[in-house]
Length: 173
Image 1 (tube, one colour):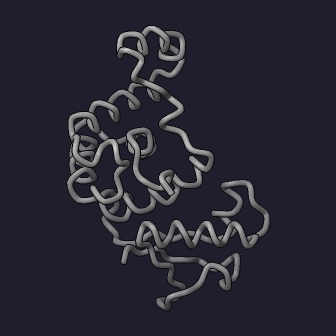
Image 2 (cartoon, one colour):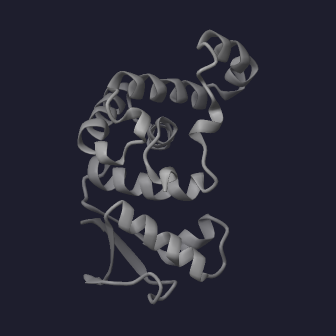
């Protein structure tokens, strides 16, 4: 369940994906810390400075990955050995990031208060061809955790029962 909480790497990836300006990213980082604090990884809940520094570190890493990879051991030594990349990566990282991005996009980035997508597109994006019970259970777990509700033509729908080619609307509840 810990992998569902926002990490600095998650937010850095979101900032990079949406190509936010420095000013916009600073505003987003602040909003997430103060308005989404209940969804932050435990290390950041009471430490805005560390939250900001770690996000900026990962932004730099994403921007110039080749250079950072060459110098990671020196950077780790400079940090007193406290920096461990494996602390920021989970097994379902990309799939978890989809729901984190969806929530942040709806709340803070888009002008709309919803996002739309076909279930088939979601499946294909993460390499699935069919919706298995495990897939649906995990999607439902993420939807509940991030307080996201699915709708089809204005009515609440269940991702286990909706047609794969139906356009689903995601809203924060």
